[in-house]
Image (cartoon, rainbow, N blue to C red; front, side, top):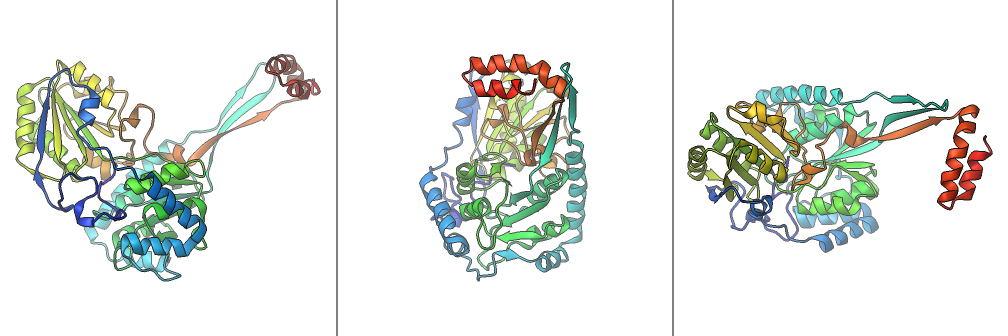
Length: 445
């Protein structure tokens, strides 16, 4: 799930403006999406240029982090009042379990049922990704066992701003639980009244989260990374957020682990003959709800299909500003361009969807076939919606239990194996200029 470009009440940006938008309009306002047409020679860079580069906030975020490191709870509360317009008392950064349990009782039955369906599927897919330890017996008589070890503490950042995101609670928390993380915290920004959204709190209760913090923005990331009087530091921070949250995660990476650096949401639909243009347009418009900077691309070798998609999308109100419509030479060229874009979400639709799926190498998540709409992945399919954006799908993966686990090798070396390995190891060590390493091995020979 990419970033909504106007969440979390960015510093000194009016909430109604929608941070990063080139038009001053509120987050719920729509306008006709601008259709940009491209021919077969277009590059991925030209398509990505449709979305504006975010304003540099490195210095502002560094100042926020430094303030939290030196000021602790008081600094977090002061920054929360400045950016979220919420005044919190000395004990109000922490949300107690009684509040999350009470919120669970306020959910509409249909929403609760939907969250339970999502919970079951997300948990099943996450658990299936766990790997057993690998034990290798080597010819010199020793063994190397590689096992995955969970981190002790993790935090899930849940953005606010445009809307509450209980689905992000489920995606992050259930995946961490599947990874066997002992302690999982959730933090979400408060509204002006000083409360976290009850739907987010209800999702925390549904996932048995007992550690919830009422804070957001860069100050929340700093608190989770370095700790305060009320906030226990964690080992890993995951979850999407605005540019301030993303920059804060970048700056604390190395102090803690992070899942990645999220940008605006992205959907590329590659459609061949047989695709329903109205359904293609609907899926693109659905993803446009994520905000004005959402990257929306339709690629097809069928010009009439593209015109139908452009017509259907161009007539609708949408939060996103632009839709790229790309005519490819053929289906393979279309897949190659989609692969070069390496989008957060890639949908293959039409008669050739199944046969082309095996050619895709770079996408955060791949949705294949008429009925595999990206929206299912955002909520209930069971795959994770915290995915790489900005072309990072070339080298990065979506959120999974591996995000919360690290591989640790265990080496068992009996005396006979040490004697057989020492000559080879000592020769390499001395060639690298480390004679004591060589002696360490030879003493055991």
